[in-house]
Amino acid sequence: MLKIEHLKKRFGNQLVLDDISLEINKGEVMCIIGQSGGGKSVILKHIIGLMIPDGGRILIDGEEISSPLKRSSDFEKVRTRMGMLFQGAALFDSKSVGENIAFPLREHTSYSEEKISEIVAEALEMVGLQQNFQHKMPSELSGGMRSRVGLARALVMKPEFMLYDEPTSALDPIMTDKINDLILSLRDKLRVTSIVVTHDISSAYKIADKIAMIFEGKIIFSGTPAEIRASRNPYIQQFIRGQRKLHYAVGSEAEEESQLLKTVDIGQVKQRVTLDRKLRRDKTFDAASRDPLTGLMGFQQFSVVLKDEIERSFSEQQPMALALFSVDRLKELGDTFGQQFCETVIKEVGRKLGMSIRGTDSAGRFSSEEFGLILTKTDPALLDKTGDRIRKRLMETTIKTPRGDELHPVLSCGIALCEESNNSTDALIKTTGQALAHARKQGDRVEIAPTT
Image 1 (cartoon, rainbow, N blue to C red):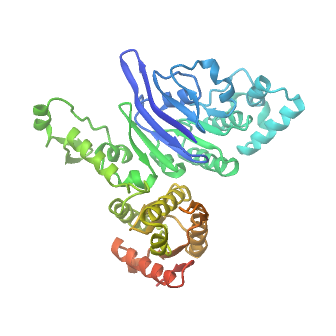
Image 2 (cartoon, rainbow, N blue to C red; image 1 turned 60 degrees about the vertical axis):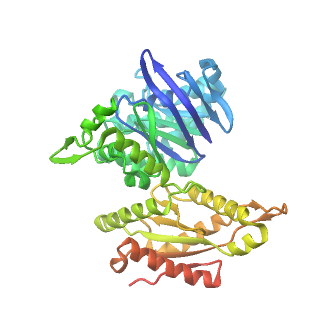
Image 3 (cartoon, rainbow, N blue to C red; image 1 turned 90 degrees about the horizontal axis):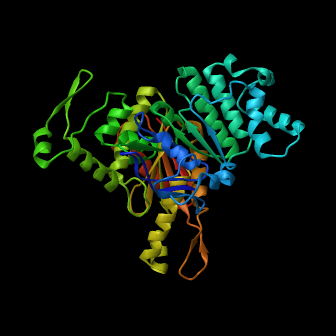
């Protein structure tokens, strides 16, 4: 795990990073979004040691790698665990493609030239380039090819962490999609932990397990792609919809009151906003919407996301489904070990669920012993296998009982495909609940609701 705690950085009188905290789990893709000049790339430079923070620290697997007391030279060992794709690829113009990719191997290893050539060839293949590209010069390459070469150079040291600084900047939509696919492919093949800085919200939706948004030096949102779409924060909605910037006045109480119903023109639509007070209210809503025990979405926010995904499913003609998981015999566990142990079971299962889903899917705590999971762009023919795979993953959770022995929770699962007959939140929840009820009668199984 890579953990950023209370990071601060000031350039002169300008506070660029103001108490930034983030957690990126192993194998995750975290996208950091925000307006240009907002400090996104500065975060990457702190992670890789090109900058030293004024306050706070960065840890990898619990070991502190960066703090105000560290020096740039302290990062030499850490950097071997990291690869970075700089904006525009940052290739050496005087070196060929092969020489660019081989550069870190010649600098940091004692490999023979034969071994280096072998690794360079593997790296080119990994990013989808042919061997004859080794002899080309950077000036002969398109923007997308330069990005691939830069990525190949970063991969030759077999990094545990990949940092991407605007990897699709200035690329056409087709090449942007190819680079995004490449990022996902490398995550799946190599299990690298990835941090991607981008202002392209479409790319973030596609590749991210989690998205963090930075505004005026602070993280104002961190969650899944589905959760950011459901956020009620007006600045976030303005950003992800591609509209021009909203300016929020922050002044005295009298000034704020005079601006409460100020009309802001966004394109041809005029909407009323409540400025800083509205921002504060919506931040409170986002925080309050999370279940305090598991950290997953609470039922209210989950319902908002479900409604959004149902509408998206029909508009984009992409199948989606709702799955409900329940912990079997939870009451018996409570009678044996007490209510506090039941809460431990729910907490650990919720944590496991949050780690077991795709970035495009959304999980929430549905009730005292049930969890909801929105499966987007899913294959209807594989619903039973998908549900059972996730259910079994949740049952791998190991929990110590008050007696000191280990317990693995047993779960049942009901799944319903969203169709014309159940194309509302209430109807889909009802259909899925009925499937779950059938599964719970026998226990330890998955039940798929009949399709119409």
